[in-house]
Length: 434
Image (cartoon, rainbow, N blue to C red; front, side, top):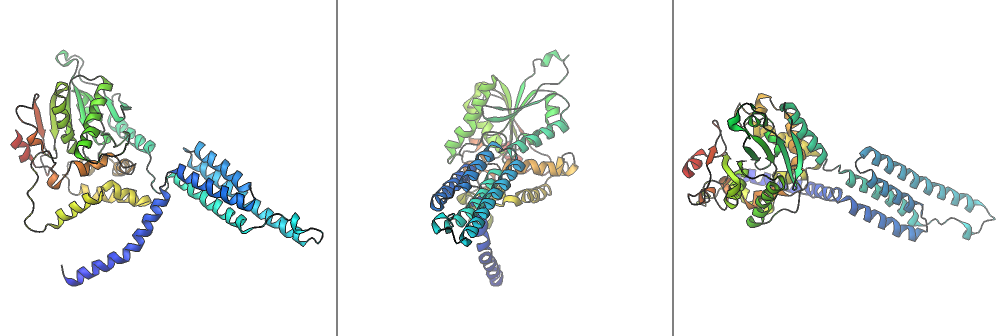
């Protein structure tokens, strides 16, 4: 890289810094929990009301805040409440000012009979209006327009477009769950009752990513797809910080889910990073696993050796891990631009995948896929922390699967599945384990 190019990049970074700081400040202000914004708004207006001895704005603010939370599912209704409250506050202040002017013009009135006209009253009016709008924007989550309800609806639409037999969506033990009952040939007595297949997705995905495969799988299995703890429709508790915490966060939650459903033995399939978790689950709970299937699993081989020369790609990845930055964090940071960033990421991603990919063939609508990914990624941070606890350079993991899948520890058949054209994961590592 030339000196001129380096100087240019440094200059551009310096020019962008004030904008990024301002953007970060706006993002922080508009993503404060609505209840905190409401407390700040009420407390500020209360203090100014006491100072100005004018209580109309306080009454209007109190009623508006109550209605905002009662109408929290109706953004237009909230907007109407805010507009009405502002109109009342401004009208009352205008009326007070007019009354004061008229009384002041009357020579028979003394100063003691005038309506108080203090600077506090004007400040009270302005701040009451501004803070009420701020509370509404926080409650309506306009900066990050991601909604669990929308994610659920999009996921349901994906299944409706591809499944011709009954299915159910639920939250079981805090984990997003889809169940597609066995729909194979009922005369095949040799397969009845059918085996149960449990599907666990990879990083950045969710149950909706299985939509195009569920119908075919249900012809052979009673199928359950379950989402990681802290991903998709699952609950989103505080994220784990260490590998051991993540083991409990992901693996123990899967066992709680199994127990809640009353499943005994099943075929367990994990894709990509999901392969890491299902392997650890199978090692810890071998009595419940009939067969372990690893589809393009991450974390199979040993981590690559440290580079002998400076590797900018590895340095960037290491810096990202230290800063706690995930693709989901970037989407949330971009605020209202998040949906456009997701679409750009998806377009870049599908340009690298085989022609047979459902997004390239048109079997899955691109806009629907992008909307599903956006609402999945932009919801509160939780399970995405797996990027820091379980993933390293070269899709490695601190405890490689090749060190777990040993003869003395494997009590069930193991099947590795890789894509035939351009799989991101190295099939040779799976062969080494076998």
